[in-house]
Image 1: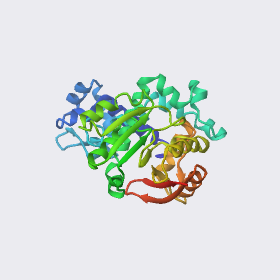
Image 2: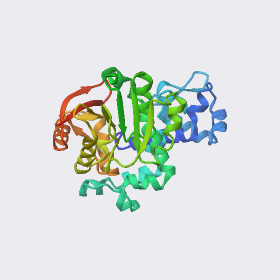
Image 3: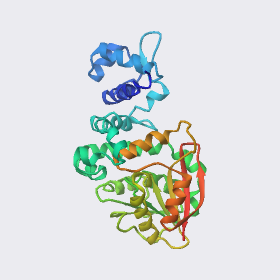
Image 4: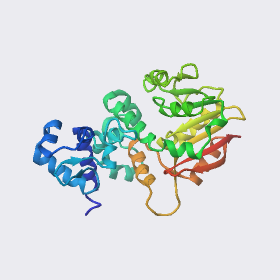
Length: 326
């Protein structure tokens, strides 16, 4: 029964994020009636919401009755260094929830459900519904920030003079690389509407002169001249034939000495629990993509004109797959 009701916990976390409960408590503990007044909620209903969340370690209630933050609750604050507020809003949104109700269809057909539900593939839909698309972009940026430290602890980006971040979104990952590796230059490459605010982010980080923004589709062409081509959370978005098309496009822009760097979850063998197994179904429902094992990646990269040189594990669920063109 707890497993069957797990989705209700997701919605409770979403409600707390949407109401801004954590943001109010970040200013200090509050009694229930005052907290309800500040977030615009019914006091009794808010008490019942917090009772469930507290039982899972999200928020706490002090001896004097005031509610306060816990470490997990801090992740729901807007200004938390590792904020998951936007992720909570995305995964608990009515749009996301509605598409998961079609999981049976996805499993029966092996196809994503967005075309049948909304008449357009996922990545086309989020470009037309920009409110939902912006939420998706912010959610993915926040999730990506969780693994930043583990990624840099495991992999040395200072080996490369010029890094092309393919599908790099709003530039968060490239900002991290260039800030930590002062001698490296970068190119951000993504669709025009996705990369529209990247230049502002780079300027705010003091990276003018070390990075440029190029736009287009990675199915058509990517910028040449990089020592390394980074694809973070890109390959898993696509089924094998589309992922291979992306990789072949990147391969065409690479010099023989350049390296491909893929940052993704690499599924372990066996049946033990793993977060990638949740995300694998999310990919099926959204875009027809998939999470892959090490063997899957080796086969995919071999077909796309690459040889895997190494797979570097991190303390997070993500790994770094480094490959060379052949």
